[in-house]
Structure formats: structure tokens, C-alpha cells
Image (cartoon, rainbow, N blue to C red; front, top):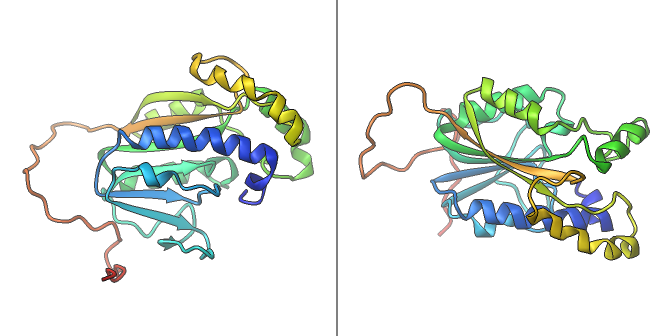
Length: 235
């Protein structure tokens, strides 16, 4: 996916997604934010108000990872994360339900989950349907619709707060043709117009039962599972 995001079409989608993620993160607060396998060249976490941002990848990358682990089994303590960002993780997972269960386990009550996905019902979804057999990214992924994600999240105790459609470019990997369709990007601010390439979904973990009153002062919360060694703080 990182290689695909370097193409002309990938860069067009990245620009739309990074703008949406940055706008979303400016309104989310807390101690720990986890991003799972980000495919972008840019870094949307520079706008985050969360103090500690962790990047999780399946293997160590050149520019560094905060955490190296599988995408469906996180070495993270339960009820420890304030925000989780899943950019196109579910489409390529063998068991997307397990990843959502991990997100529910690790998020604190009222913690936020940000999902970026491809739209299976637009033009991009149509291309995926007819070219999936070739095995090329991202078209070989299992695109998940917003309605299905809403249902899965509701069963896990999440409330969907917002869904933002993203990127109305044609799925043609040609810089010149993409430049000519740049005017279609204004449709992102026109509501749920059909034909979008992807979407950003924001959900919040529901609090079940009584919510205890939190003290004004709280000790620093660790995000690592018991037995894991926290990284040494740099001087």
C-alpha cells in the first residue's frame, strides 16, 4: 500500500485523507493514540492534541515504529488508549472482526475510533469488483460499506458519530487526467454525494451502566500490556 500511495492516484487520495484526518484529530484529546500500519507518506499526527502517538507496523520500518506487532493482536493493555486510527487496515485483514475487537478492548470508555476505508458502491468499488482477480493493491481488498461497519461497531458497543465521504477522482492512475478532474474534489463538502472513493468514519466506545466521576488528577496511564517493557524516555 505504501508503494501504491506513491502513484498519482494514491497521492490524490492521500491528500484528501490526510486533510480529513488532521481535521478530525484536532477535536480528539487524551494521553495515548495508536495508528495501525499507516500507508501515507505524510504524517497527519502533527495536528493531534493527544500527548503520546504510537505507530504500529507489522515489521520495523526505516523511519522507525513505536510498536512492532501483528495487526490483529496488539501488545497493548486493555482500556488504555484514547484514540485508535485504522487507515485501510480492515480491507486487507484476514479477520476484520478481530481487529475491531482488539480496538474495543484497548480503548478507554468514551475513547474514539477513526476508520478510513474504500467505498464498495462507487466507481472505485466497481473497479475493485471487476479487477480483484488480478491481485493488485488496493483493488484486491475486501471493500467494506459504511452500513456494514456501523452494524459491526454497534454490536461491539460503539456509537458512530460521523461519516465523511472522501475523494471524488476517477480511479485512473494518470497524472494528467487526474489533474483535469481536480474540480470534483469540491463535492467532499457537498454532503453524501454518491461516487466517493473512500470515507472517514468516527466512532466512540459506548459507556455501559454507571460512569464513575473521574478525579481531576490522574496518574500517567501506561498503554503497554503487563510484562512489556516501556521504551526508555529520551533525554
